[in-house]
Length: 122
Image (cartoon, rainbow, N blue to C red; front, top):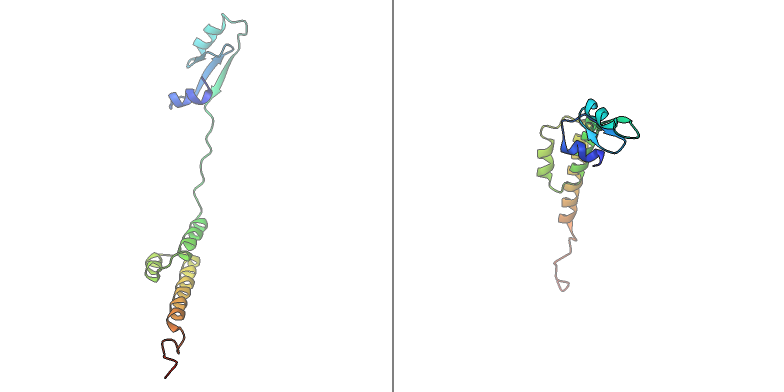
């Protein structure tokens, strides 16, 4: 059995004891008693690997994610809703800039060619 599988099978186990022949024991005394009959009498303690804690994203990192999401929105209403309770100035700025971009795109789309649709014979 691999170290990983022992800890997976026993989630509350913090360590176990292994003898030179690969036998695993929860109790050091049992491991030592077994090792007395072996040529190599070593008993080693195998501790659960320490898992690295994932660091929570900082407020700045979270604000950057929200600003990025707003920059990808294509609805002025959705952006305004996202900004309703927003406190981060950078996110508010990104939202206002995106609204301005969308409003300009709408204005430009509505302008078109003033002569368009007229008959050339008139």
